[in-house]
Image (tube, rainbow, N blue to C red; front, top):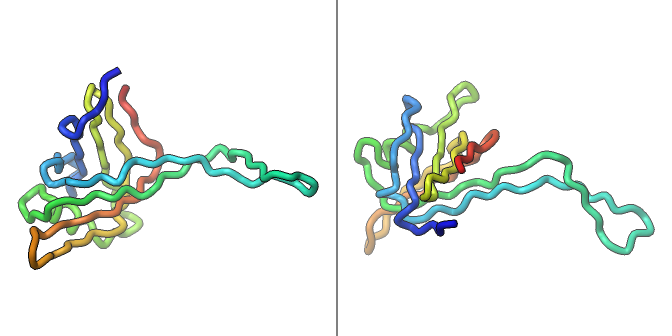
Length: 140
């Protein structure tokens, strides 16, 4: 089993035509891909400890992406700023993270928020908050 390093990571996001764009050169932070089980508390009167049972539904956490702002074609401003606002009829956009060693995770997302963060003593940064929807596609 090989380990993944920062140089192995490739981050891609759909443009408005549904074509994945490699945005790795702009991304400095990736908040992680979280999937959790929804559970229900099932303890009853007389139990001394809390009990829980999974309900058979998973839940995605929001994904935070951040890095250096750039208004180049295919850059973060081009991709994220153009995706807002989103109507219920707009297509979702794919987020794909390649972990190296031919392993990747891709999922359809809805853009929740896009922020440009100017700083008078640093380069301007961006951040995007994505809400995954549906089932992930994992490659081995």
